[in-house]
Image (cartoon, rainbow, N blue to C red; front, side, top):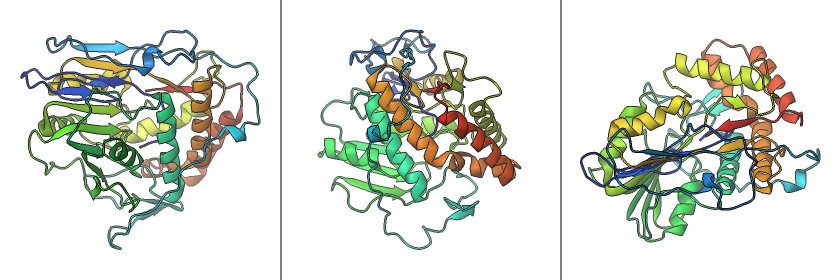
Length: 388
């Protein structure tokens, strides 16, 4: 999961073979429902109304493939004219992070400029660090998304009794833990390349060290709900992953995918092509493409196409705008911006260190663009947000 440039959306739909499978893209999905981002946002103020269209998704009636995508646009963001400089007291306290007790071979990590990363194989190469600094950011991002989604863990209408559930790329495992607590009757699995999850977890949850890009060992029609969140820049073949998810979903099951765009935006012109945010994101996008692990997951409705081409139907997309900093007028989005500010201020350098180094950047060049980006992060006249 990435924690630097957040915003989100979702899709859901059913497959063309009448298996009644749904998919929620960027929020939740199943073989009959899918959620995906990339919706043009109207320029209206974000309000505190919990019935805001970006917070809810409905499951439309079944329709033919290709015309089965419903989009829910994001709210706009208004700037708070009295945005204060001192808002430390508003920051939430990040939860503690415990490391799993596993064999020493599983804990062999690579070092890049003083940060630790998962020990890559040829097929799996995750760009984000897996050290305590990054893991704190992952947990904070979970809290931020919890606020963004009005206290919900997902948007898919999975019902009250899901039996088998998997969280792919679980990271610190915080989403899987919360889900297992909410559904104690469900069998929940969290998979990841790094063993960074806690050992004390609900009895109905287990964590597995696994590479989701390889063929899944799970049988056909097994899961009621598959959850994927913030794996941009991590997957070499997204359509192949979607096909594997589709195969393993039960008829009537749901697949939810939540991801971010790495393209910074502003509605008031405070972000330009020469901004530090723009330079940093452009460098990451270029590095991801060079390594064959795109960061363009929701841009240009890529994930919507993957849902449709895989066979998901009744696809619904929810679009969010996620600010960086406490500049929105809405109390909800102000808190989201505060959390996002802390996440970015804590670990801006960690997001790009590995991919940019692999793409030929020196540490000095990385530091220069990170410093420029951080200066804009601290500038309250810069009102940046990211789509999701």
